[in-house]
Length: 235
Image (cartoon, rainbow, N blue to C red):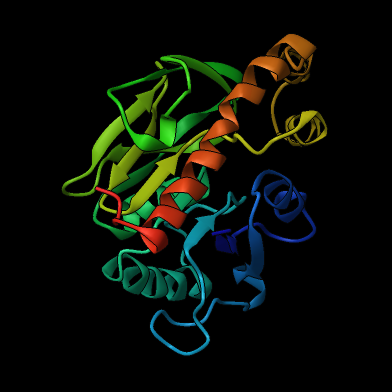
């Protein structure tokens, strides 16, 4: 059975976010741009028809006082109570952590560019992905306390990079990025020209090739979502 995914787009304005996730998710995807007031239907209603939820990155912070963030948190609580598999990426990773009782803070600096990330333990989301893998990073907030019952799954020397709590997974890195997105996001940062150029120089064919292997986690997530529909619920 093909998965049907609700893409909860937290990005602000005209971005590549939706396009990037549609490219990587081999599923039927309906996108909802929360900052524009677009929200998925409530779980359990006749309009709800999704096997899983994916929450994107954003320029905002999860602790910002914005009405749509609070509304999304209320909606997400019902998603988790229903056991719907959810994958949060970057902002989405931080949002899941905060909403379920963890803590997110300003790290005081950016983790930016292609980085080597170390797995911690095993989980179906990372099936077939090496113990040390590559992905693009762009964040200055970080999860410093996990929600109750959560398990850490990956980290760098800078910050926690992945966790699982019940049927929700968060990843701090951006497995959906392509070369153009990585370059545009880097060039738009308010950082020194020297640092920006250093990160741009690191967007090489070799780094992109290594990061390509990390995209396998999208297929793993879809397998988890369809398994929940066709068979036993994950973990």
